[in-house]
Length: 492
Image (cartoon, rainbow, N blue to C red):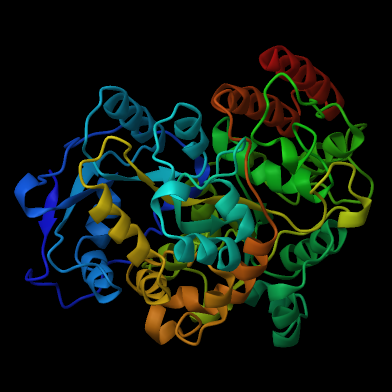
């Protein structure tokens, strides 16, 4: 059920768990189902604002978030209630849609996945924050937040802000420094790798050396199961880094459906897919690429999601891991991990296939990180709009963003805070503080997924073809041709 919090409540002395980063949340778009109370125990007469979020998220934030809101300007007479939802992001979307369509006034505020915020926008299920927030707050968001992150909260037609960007999530590559040391690399290399993206060719060479010189059984753990995480994120990064796109570049992510090109059957898409097939192939054949080593990734990647990929890395079987920042506390706080100490977990931006000025599709090329994360949307039927707006304004304060980084490892939505002394201090925010420079690079090169109502069904089509190609069940060329036809049909 919902939890009530007022300023007079007793807060636990221990900080909220950093264990998840709301792991499946931000980024995968994976679906779980909405359970628990739909409404908060709001108490109309006392002005309580009901915030809906997944039950696991509530467990992480219910002690710390309200205090941070009061400390950052929220009127102490406004109580905060949490409406417990399932941890399944797709079902959250569906439940919010049903409630708003039915005219329900609660919850007042809703955590919204960047992957489907636009679905609520297209259906008129979110209040227009360009009309509700004051000019100072709107200017702050325009000028200080990650641009790509904010774009996922805007109406693609009017450019109005329809949700408050809360915390972003970015894909990176993580690696075992001990295995890299076995291959002859040192701290100077690690420092350079943390912020300077390398080419896929250089990365593959280094990874192969790490496997050959260490106890690692294989090079790369990543996600290529048949689910949205493959199409939105793990492959989206690779494709974008080669200058490719599903629908003709970044400008078409929000549509218009039926009036944008499908650009799958193109050289840049095929090459990026062929590279991933080469990495997972047992030996060279007609579909592998000569410039990349085979066998650098296990064939098991075609059955792995985020946790499936993390486990072999955390147990020392793989040298490299593509994943979200949640793996930092999840791996380092585990009982058994293959590092001498926390500093032996390294991170680097996603490698690039071509430079930005060589990219075929607009807005692509160079290092690219999948854009994940969550926003806060305002129920247009809310009877407490004024109080809810106060909550959102408090959420834009630097100290709130840094506080949430400390209590639950939510990345700040502002690039400058990634350099803040507190944000980069592991003693203050936990081990995630060691990776803020890498994550800032990822945030500045983020690529969102397409965000139209058609995307969920298109994502499944994409993931199926990607999975078959990487598994060797079809060639990259044939997979691209079949997918081109299927997406063209979907667009029409």
